[in-house]
Length: 274
Image 1 (tube, one colour):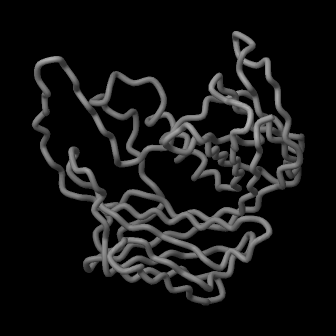
Image 2: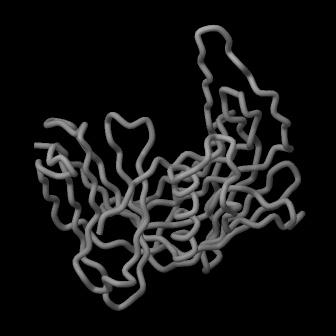
């Protein structure tokens, strides 16, 4: 199973127009800011998962160099038994941190954010993920046979329908590389995630993370990946779809936020290229 892995770039696009004579800045109309709630709860195998962070920002001006953050929000996550986990802001950062979170596979959690007089909510389940079993390397991959290929293998669970997010940290890439896959045609089989690049070199460290995700988040990420890295007509092209997450505005349902609330067990492997 071979897939293209694209950089997951949300809400930040830098366009630099260079000529030998003039620099041209396009006068763009500014839309009203929308709140962005990045609420990814990730429980890495072998850890307690007690420390989690939710980041809250807003959209901003196209040419703005920094991302505006939301301060002073009230952020909580509750489990189905009524246990409430408070996320407190690291002063002035827009990062809301919990140090006593209790992750349980298949437990359902509800996020509540109150910011600037508006209440946002979402619910999701914490999805399990299999262990990464083996890693293999080929030095003659690609069309020219000059690429290095890495394959990360894992065993799919045959008793359920599974969806996965794959993430690569590559030292010469400015952003993580993401992909999604499911077991529709490989249920219960040994599955793998594959990456190859002509710029891979001996001694480089590649980090691969496998996330268990919901079907809905699978389709959400698939849209984002295609918007960020798929074919387009340039930076001003119209996106093929509105990328709407699972977080609702309880105060004004028509003014939905950007971002997603999801919970994943993850397995992580670091591999040094031979």
